[in-house]
Image 1 (tube, rainbow, N blue to C red):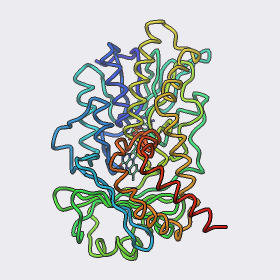
Image 2: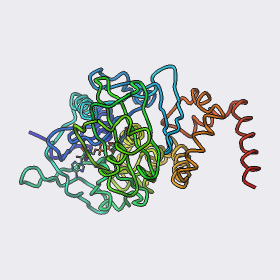
Image 3: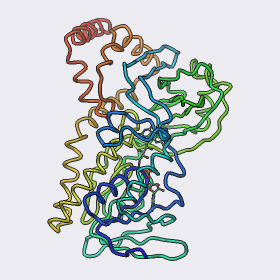
Image 4: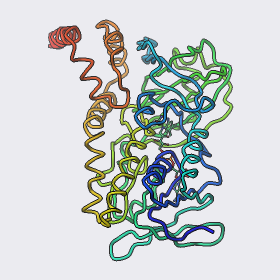
Length: 408
Ligand SMILES: Cc1cc2nc3c(=O)[nH]c(=O)nc-3n(C[C@H](O)[C@H](O)[C@H](O)COP(=O)(O)OP(=O)(O)OC[C@H]3O[C@@H](n4cnc5c(N)ncnc54)[C@H](O)[C@@H]3O)c2cc1C
């Protein structure tokens, strides 16, 4: 018999929802998690490319081996005209996880320590009394049921229905890219320990395309773009891109999915009375790469800690819960600002400049310098550390001067 009252309700059984529930349950909360689908992790739409350092910081590394599809030592960037720029490290920096198994793994841990999952249960609306969120109304089968809680955490992903009802605004629609992700076989010349990134406005305007090998000879290929039909763009990439097509022309698509990625940085307000939001619903996603799992789960942990403090003080007011956003900003704010600048810069670069930029990066030995780029999640901090080395400063200064003289 389930309980209609709990200390906390989490809406959405994705990685950010389950990780919030896991941390809440660890802190002694009784938690009800609602997931609209019949199975956790299904359907999956994500490439599952995660940093080893990020997973370690969340206490999730090493993962059980069956979840990890491959590990990577770096990446190769292909310019629109087929120039290449390699960044390779001496040990694996990222891994590809099977997102269905990853989501199930977090949910199973959460259930084991006492949280209750309601599957096939769509949260239709919030219960709001005297300006405070007091619970949710869920459709389960044909019935609608009311569940109360002291705090509701919205982890619905990008399609959040609850934010507006809680008085919060949704993500910046101008910074949304539409993505496609496919599993393929029969790829030629697959580099097995590196992720390939393909740039070019004709294929992925406002983002990029990726190719990620799996250990079983198959691969994940995908892209995201501001405009265009993702399915057609993927076809174009596989058949026409100067380098991608050589590898993918004969590949067979085994599975394909479509979803969107918010690149505009977190929504302006992530809390209200009795309510917090985490993950894609809060647009806690890296504006450069679209990666949302590590950032979202980092914020999920903060949300659980803040909810715990609120429970001890018996204060779930928006005034108190505002520390959630302050702590998330402290942790991610400067990196997100930095990444937003890079995203805008990349969006403004025409393809010819991208070719020049890739040439330039190789010329100044940025590939070598980036080997000390030790954090692909917190990119702002890491890049500063990387560039804070005398050799790089001299090279960049030299380039800056020659660039200025060449352009005037
Ligand atoms: C093509 C593609 C590739 C990507 N690749 C990467 C990558 O390589 N690395 C990375 O870090 N990120 C990647 N991302 C982003 C990543 O998928 C998201 O950031 C991440 O899934 C966010 O997790 P979440 O828990 O916030 O939301 P989701 O994973 O979207 O989970 C939300 C859950 O809530 C449920 N739900 C929604 N509404 C309700 C409701 N009203 N009631 C009940 N349940 C509800 C949904 O069914 C879903 O299970 C990619 C995204 C796309 C589209």
